Image (cartoon, rainbow, N blue to C red; front, side, top):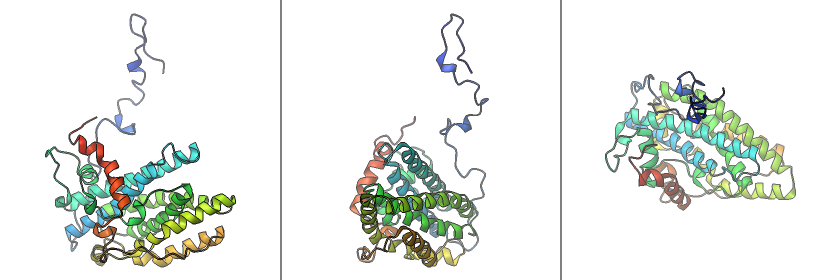
Length: 313
């Protein structure tokens, strides 16, 4: 469509895109407003399910994807080439989308988990949960919060994370909670791509140059101490699993282990012989106890929202 000229002959550049969407702004990546992501969805909590347990379970899953999304987004303009820059950004956006839905589901299940805004201004609950909780209020596994390291370390972590999360979502698709089931069904398609992308790069780096292999092995060794935490059952996991709403992480341990063994075998990489990182007095990320790297990351992620809590753009 050519720019529409003014009567005086000058081009009206502001009208260049007029009519492209026929007045439907929803097709833009960021529309003109931000509606409730669960609008029109039945958010009734299933019978026999504790509202707070469901909310906390959703926060756990949401925080995993939110923090991992932010870490992957840090590769923007820093990846080895433009294609991988875009691929990592797209994976980050997939995870961010999962997180938004899960945070909204947590708020719908129990509004008390949503923090009060500093100036009491109204914001979407998923934004309040993402930007106005402190580090002890986040419930993500510690694997996702570690520093990125180099590309080899990021690929090693993405293999572990995506293989684990895909197995969880495949089972979560049968959840009695309609929202969790819908999020899981959509997420399975996304996580299948994430796992395959990471596995292909894992094999490529392992069978590439001596340097690429060295970096991959070093990255896997650095990441592996946080691997066991993926399969540790928290009391919230147990409560929602008993109500047929959630999944016990321990239930997917054997499946994930088998898939990782296939990846390691094809790549000619030995399973790391590294001790797991212990919690502090038995507490880990699921309990709100995180690594120092997480506090720094969270400060960066939240700084603009906290500086302008009522900001609109």
